[in-house]
Structures are given as C-alpha cells and as structure tokens.
Picture 1: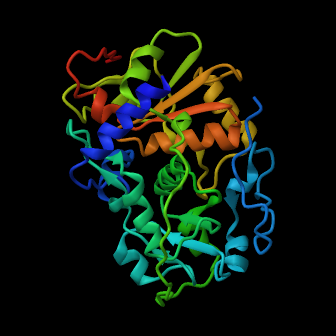
Picture 2: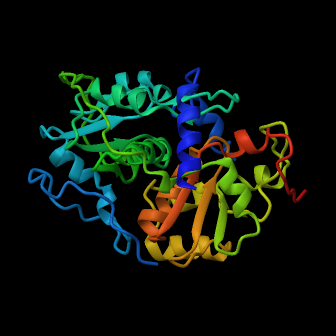
Length: 335
C-alpha cells in the first residue's frame, strides 16, 4: 500500500497543471452554502519562547493544537512565531492581527492530470509559499481565518502532510478576535524570505486516495465520514457529474463542530456528535473524511484526530470532486 500510495503521489505531483482556489475561492465552493488514545503529534518542545498552550476548553486529546486569542496577543510578534491570515487579501488589508502576514491559499493547491481540482500542491510549491513569509523548520505557525477554521484546518493538514513540526490554529477565528475588541492593524510586517523546504517523507498516513476509499467501502475496520451538507449527501445538491455519497458513508456536516462563537465544541460534545451519527472508531479502525474538495474534510479530520482523539484519521484529498465525476464509482443516494 505504501508503494502504491507513493507512486500515486509522484504521478499526481509531477503532472499537476493548474492552481485551483481550494484554499481561497474554491474553498467557498467546498464550504456549505448558507442556510481512543492517539499518537502525539510532533511539537516544538525545544522552542522555549513558545510556552505550552492550554486550550480554553478542557478535554481535547491534543489541546496544544489550538491557541487562544490571548495567546496570540502575547506571542504574535515573537521572532519564532509566524501568524498567518488566511482570509481574502482585501480583508487582510482592511485590518488584521498585529504581526500577522498574509498568504494566498490558492497557491497551495493544483489540478491534477485527471482534472481533479483542489489537490494538495507538491511539497516544493507549498514550501515556497511559506518561505516567502519567513518560515523556518522550527517556526511555530499559527493560522486563522474567519469561517470556523475551515481554511486553517486545510492548511494545517497540508503542512502536516509535509512534516512541519509545529502548526496550530487560533480557536474562534478572526470573528472572535473582533468581538473581543482586540487590536487590528493595516501594517504589513516586513519578513525576510527564507530557503524553507520540507525534508521529511510525506506523511501518507493522513492522506487517502481513491483506491483506498474503494477498499474501505464495506470494510468493518474502516469508517467513512462525509463532511458535506445533508443535501449534498442525499444527492439533492449536486456539485459534480453525479450526486450522492460514497456507499456506507456517514454524514456529519462539519459546521456542527463549532459553536456560535466560532470556537470548537468541548471534546465530549464533539465525541457525542460524531458517535450519534455512527462515526466512532477503535484504535484499530481508520476513519476517512471527505467532502467536495478535501477542505471541509480537513476540518473534520482535525476534529476527529486532535480534539476527539481517534488514532487513525485520513483526509481523502480527491473527495467528491474525484468520486462524483469518476465513471464507475459506486454511489448511494437518499432522495
């Protein structure tokens, strides 16, 4: 399986052709229309300037993956901390967290040789985006957006695929920052570009491909979680050649994992939310998340892996953009 995955990765990356706006504009198309013990992740324990983070809500499997707005206030301008604003450029320019830099999330995705949009870009392309804003291997990267950490989850997942050691998200997003009356600025920090590059082998344990999902269908050791809206899941909202869902997939709309304040629900509420829908796993089971283009799925991946604490969670990057347009892919509907 590892060799097969690696072959698929090499083929997809070497033939990637066009940037797609999954992290930016296409993220909007992927976002819903309005209407167990785990293996600890790598940390920057030696990073003395960045203290251990205590999440605002207790019970998360890995609370240090989230930082509070107060933590950002205290640490945003430290030399080894890089706060990144993932909103639209015009929103960043209108006002952002002091010390925060902006990146274009559309630069982090590509369309592969089969026309599947929104695939994670090759390591060199992704690294160049972060090198431009001064990232280094030991930098603590903190992400924020203005929509339930949707873009932040996807960027965090991508960085972890390629092995960045310390990446976190600001709980509550820009919306909470504003509601708390915290300062905003139009000043753009001057950061020196670096030669940042990923050196680790891609972590294939957190990214899934089409063949893996095919094999997961009907396998009791696998759980497939559809992070889209109930309308998409049922096949009434069709965003590909075909509508519906992967056979046997369980539907939990990603938006349900956040409260009205934008913060994630407490761990017990998250565990119940997913368990009530049938998404529960032992340490020996793998949970696969998917959506339209792997963005909402990354949000669910983050919740299940780092907040709930399931040991094996993978994001199907091709998601419905691939499955729903692929001839011969099995599909269920519940119209």
